[in-house]
Length: 156
Image 1 (tube, rainbow, N blue to C red):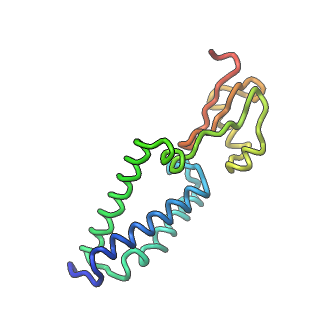
Image 2 (tube, rainbow, N blue to C red):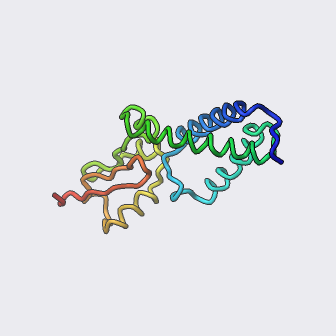
Image 3 (cartoon, rainbow, N blue to C red):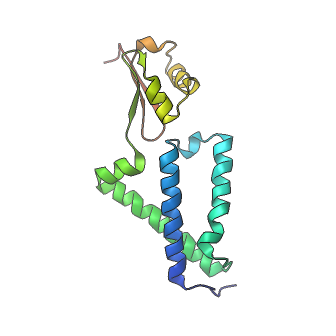
């Protein structure tokens, strides 16, 4: 129950490798945040968690191994959070940068495609701001947190 089948440092190393891999995988595929996941995204996230479990624990089902992995993953997360706070370059890599989807009433379809934002998503964000037509929008910006900010032309 408590005995490890692998050395403790192997759990730390495996956890760090999988954390980095999954982080990069998700960073390269989407800007969406957890609150914006579709049911398909949630299923994918759960399946990836299950798929990488054995690669992190090397088949060890001990409580100690689970504790070491949990501490490793939380420590890595805290470390990344602190690095993004201290370094703009790291922050931009981890969180991405805002992207302009609408500028002076003109929709940037190329950026929508690049960022995987559908017209339906953009129209929803505009409606939530009381905008029915993109022509009255100065900027609609896909923020690094996945939200779309809308600034009307007549706002100061």
